[in-house]
Image 1 (tube, rainbow, N blue to C red):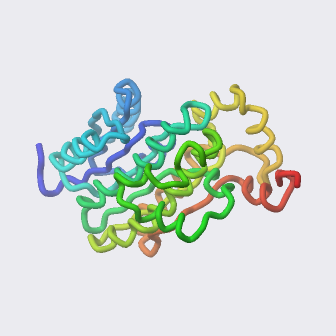
Image 2 (tube, helix red, strand yellow; image 1 turned 135 degrees about the horizontal axis):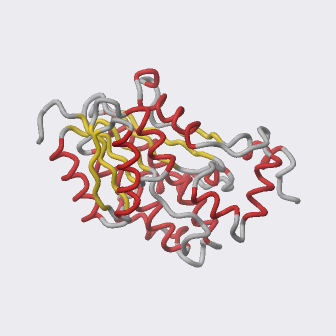
Image 3 (cartoon, rainbow, N blue to C red; image 1 turned 135 degrees about the vertical axis):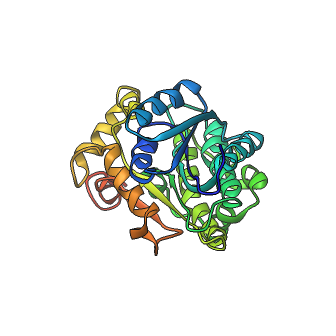
Length: 280
């Protein structure tokens, strides 16, 4: 039953990282888990419910405006949207360049737009991007601005995102994740007018079921090399991302908005300045 006092935390993408953040910021609130696959939401809901959280589930396709709008409607019927954890996406090994741009870039912009219109005063959100966005060479000022501010329905028509300009699925992923952090910076201005905050976390290799698939797939050797040659020398855990998410969404992060937090164990540092640097 809807009451004016119910605060809702919307989690899009019911995987390990989304759950880890939700566990830290959702005590006393209603968790709405949304995923493309009902079985994913159901499994996460069981875990969170058994840990004492109030949870409901729904299905969402972030690449569909109608679907995202329906999610917003479901959330606002429960109560006031107090938090958004957007952790849905597809990886370079999972999908084509076209699908990655549609889901990871367009889908994230769509989610930010729709939830930025309903987020409650004092609310906050985090978007899970990736270290990959930090390994993309510098874009032009015009390209940065376009990724940050182009109308959502015009994003995929940008000239530098067309098939002849995007080299492969990894390039599409890097562009999408760079776009996520830029989009969040721009959206922070609009969210701020509602008294709310939004930030991005760019994790490195975090051990999740997806990462295990990647490690056993065609990119596995490259992933292991990144881990071994990073400054920390290991992969990360969902709980470590959860700690950063809790900071950004909680009162201790009240002065942080529009920012991107790279947490990759030093992989990017090694890529630009260490042993992972591409051979010239």
